[in-house]
Image 1 (cartoon, rainbow, N blue to C red):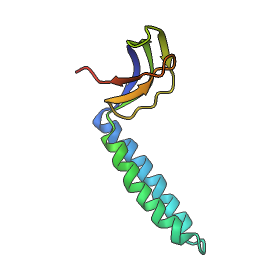
Image 2 (image 1 turned 120 degrees about the horizontal axis):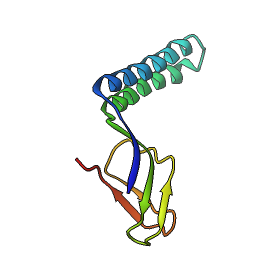
Image 3 (image 1 turned 135 degrees about the horizontal axis):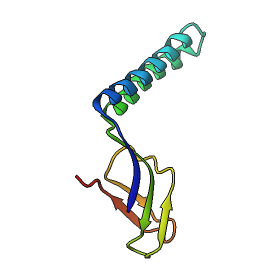
Length: 106
């Protein structure tokens, strides 16, 4: 199978994590003065900032699309917008529905 991926350097991973952290903290700051909403919005934005920035910091690869011959049905398949954040991952074949395990070759 062939894959179109984006590999992130450590500097790119830090920048992506910083960007999502700052955007969500800004959301928490902007939702603080809204009566009633601030009880849910501020903790939600802060928790989201921590969780998503940690995820972005650890993400080394982003798989955009996959293509190749399915080993189960033998058909040529193209999977667009795969969006995997890490490998190994499982994806169903669009032709036969059999799950394919995707692993990175190092």
